[in-house]
Image 1 (cartoon, helix red, strand yellow):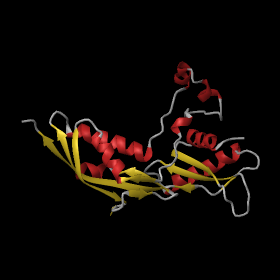
Image 2 (image 1 turned 90 degrees about the vertical axis):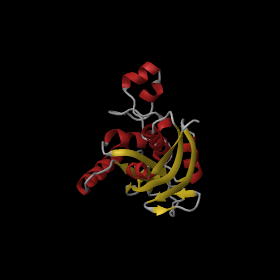
Image 3 (image 1 turned 45 degrees about the vertical axis):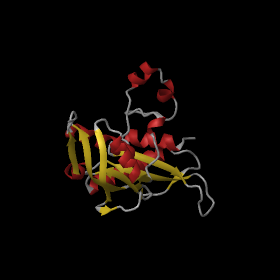
Image 4 (image 1 turned 120 degrees about the vertical axis):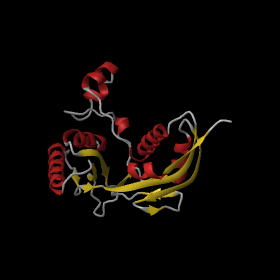
Length: 219
């Protein structure tokens, strides 16, 4: 029988519009039926309504063609994007470039919120000796994915974690007046939750305008 990881790999491999997917078993079905799964899909940005409908139909077909016996799926959920925006005053050393700090901040926070999947080539996995990734599980036709890349969807993050990430970047001296917004709304609690049917993503354009750098020059 295929596992939730197997279904995730098949969907991501065979449907190009999918950026990530989560397949979750329903543990407390009201009818006591087992073998039913929720399918949550993160699509690539800027798809039209028609493209989204075609994608959903393709994913349904993929699941039906590959499902195990006594397995069924709830209607596919297309995840909504929760946009995270940041504002802060950041003191940095004089030997680093603000643009470089910006790039590091975006990469590390976006990886914490919603890490992009890494795909592997067939020959690359063979050279690594990772035969399990190649020959076990479902047949992957286009993109090879290792199990450890398939992380759980982020359901919450702490503002403290975001501050820690920024402070950990080489060249950053201090972070003050950090403000986190979710979908344009200022977050006052330390914990920032994300719904089951949504995923977080950092607004790069906003934070580039809203992070103020102060150069700490040596005396």
